[in-house]
Image 1: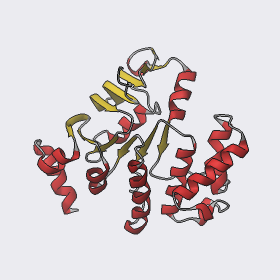
Image 2: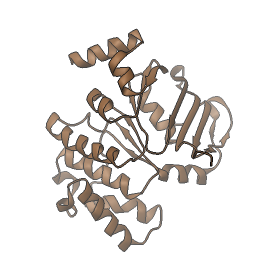
Image 3: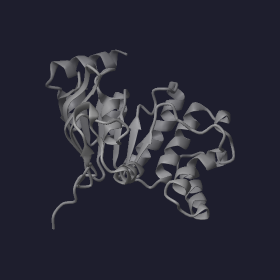
Length: 258
């Protein structure tokens, strides 16, 4: 019996903004149950890689493959765009993104925020979605905030609501873009505990993170990006226990000092 294809696979990806090359031939794979952490200094291309994986950014060259199905493209270079809008919609609904700044709708309650996409995008029955949404709010520890407005919640609670919203889509993978960097240390730990629990459940996740302890403790694979290229990658024990690259050694030394 052949192994299932990776949930997400990226090969030879190039991305530039005008004359600025942000990704320069990057390969990345996340199989079912993998927790892949993307680390590196600001401007190394981590968030851009995540956004390209979710087709929120168009790349100029390379392949994005979701569960064995390559994204179809039209045009070349800076004129390259996905050729099939339905394929993009299907991939995006299966790769739920959690952003740094929560992105909750201020005019909806927390429960309505969590329910909105499954009802309007996926067309699932409202009663079924509400039951699921309340269960996910309980999972992230804010069941009592279902009827509150986003402005009434702390940053950590808002980010946990954003995670519940992502989970309610029942995606094949969760993509986290610096999920704790906007939070103070106490609130950060609330969110880290939720992400740890999700990792323990065997959920497929790709995390862009500045939190080296989280990357070391939760990841099955760590990718260190430097100037748009993968400088070093491997299991966390290898990268954090014996980095080969001088650039990675410097990065980890600076991270620990901070």
